[in-house]
Image 1: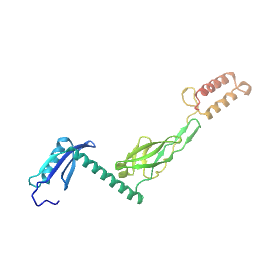
Image 2: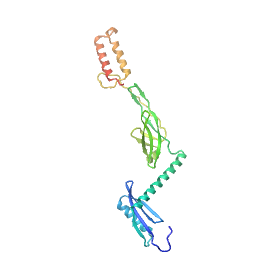
Image 3: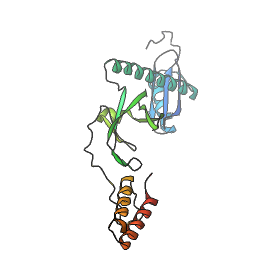
Image 4: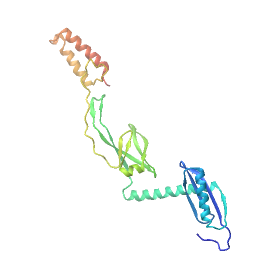
Amino acid sequence: MTRPEDHTPPSIIWGRCPGGGRWFWTARIVGGEDRHGWASNRNDAARKANRAAVLLAVGQYASIRINDDDAELKLAAVIAEKHAQAKAEDKKRTAAGETPVNLYAVERGYYDHGACHWVHSRIVRLPVTKTTPRRIYFLRSSEPGEYERGYIDRQDFEARGWVYSSRYNKIYAKPPELPNDKPFIPPPFRSEYPYAPVSELELKRLKIAMRDAHPDKGGSSEAFIKARAEYEHARDRVSR
């Protein structure tokens, strides 16, 4: 810092303002050196700013005044500089292939009652749309042909290479291995479980059993009545 030689007292301004759940403070010599930092509350920020102003005066008489607007301007400049540095860093990481272009997750397998078959697990790609110092934003499918925006914690993700997700369980930086599916196939219809879902295939089996139980096919009236009751009950419970 350059000090004037004519002993003109330096003009020093300090101030504080809220920011990001904390309090930001700053102190500066007009046209010269400045200092800034963070505090947990308003009073602590005032103490730190005032102390910084006294230190800037280096033991000589100085004109010190308070201007909280000055702190707001400095905070805006600090945030802008931080974002500019983050963007520059992102460009370097992207050029080096370090910033993800896509995220990946596993969509777990499930039984499709309408189609009556098991849908195996698959890897889904989640395109990255934006990165900030704190978050990575991406797109995920909500409905066929429709997408919604999601985000993950960037620092947590970069530290582990994956993060927990309420929808996908985990989101990864690279395509993960598919799990060993254990397909769930609904059991055959049983009259003691009248509200269990019934597949088209099982309904077809019950219809054949009803036909075979008919007296004209060698069955009995009792067997046919029972088989027809099971078929009609299952028909009302079939998954469509």
